[in-house]
Length: 639
Image (tube, rainbow, N blue to C red; front, side, top):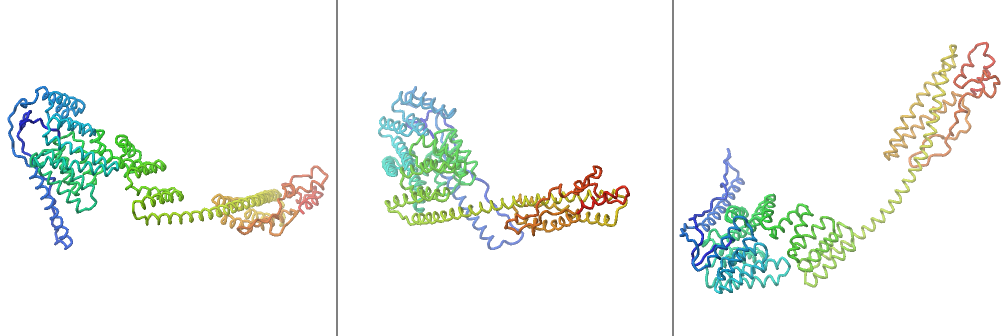
């Protein structure tokens, strides 16, 4: 909250009498009775709920009492006596710029003009300094407060504002990894504030700043009991502030942060939302703190909303940016997270948390070398972050399988940690584990090479087997197709002869049976080839063996029925070999169609009219008188 213009307890603007009280955060929890008596477990649960409700109500009542404000009626006056009138006009312009348009530049200019007109105008100094604070220009803020102190050496408020800025700088030093500098600034701030409180225990600015001191001290403390002790001390100073000024925005903000640190997130949310932001809608700090409260309550979308509102009010609210970046990182939005961290690092070079954040976001984006570079920068800036070297080692080990670099990172950690007197047992175990993994990986790679070579040989053998099978399949398909046609042609010729003999009728019956057996070749071959395409060689070879076993005898019978003279007959020809063995090359050779067709009479019958096609050969067997001379030729062609 920006300072009011006061001089000798007078107020420049008209003030309406106010009475501020704290209402309940929400309806009290109720328990519905069940039709039957509750179980002992249910009773215990209800009793626990009742106790928690009582505790919450006590906290709310205590907060309500601390925020009570008695009615105060202040006489309206136009200007504060003793302060330059023109300076007061400029001051008023600055206040209007702040609260109506939130124009920091115009407000800053107005306050600077007010100070120039009246060197003793403390409120103008303080509001000017707070603008610098709110925009992150802490050094400029200190200079303004120091100017106010130089002009008013007894001003406890000026000293308190300087102490508060020291605390903000201390927090920043801790974030940069400069713990020694941070402790020094905290000590200087506390000493300065104690001097103010020794003279004026009710100094609001000093009480506010001391509360912030204890809050920061609790954040730095690892012991839980001491954390609670420090928070309790800070709360006592805030109670002093809110007793004097129940609507003091800084005090309300700090009290909300204390509740947040204690895990009382609902109360913290209520203060930020219903008190601070109602009093100062432009409080970027309040929006950031409200975002933290919602985050603690598990409402991430609302948290993101208020962090963004904080940035809308002040794009240089680096704390809000850090909070947004952390959320983006958690939800794997690495690019958005990295952008926020980079903004912070550009504004505050050396910020360790932002440096680590950029490293984590880069690794999430699989830019590992970039991520490792920022991790090492963070370790250089703050050696207590040595754990980052372990993180680098684990990434090399588990993600990248670069075991040599993993061992280097672990050994780097061991060396640095040993120098700091830290236990390195786990890191040494990680080194041993990495080397074991490296050896296992080496053996696996060797085994994979052997398996790849075996697989290549198996594929080559399979390819050769498939090629050989295809050759046998073509021979089988050719013979089956050729003999099927010849059997059909001879059948047709016999049927065309009206005086078929008993042998002719027997041939037709035999031909039908053989053609059925030969007809299975095409569908069987399709199935076999489908199995080959699906890499089911065992099934394909089993089907091929069954096919050859069925069709080869039919081919032999067809050759006998057609009286085809074989040029060569090899034992076991056309049979599919057992799975995994090479097919015999001595298959029954493919008989050329010209030799298989009964056209041999062309060579023996000199008469042109008797040299008929094979399909008409059976006609020569008919008992017609004029064709008796052609009969021996037809029989010779059938042998």
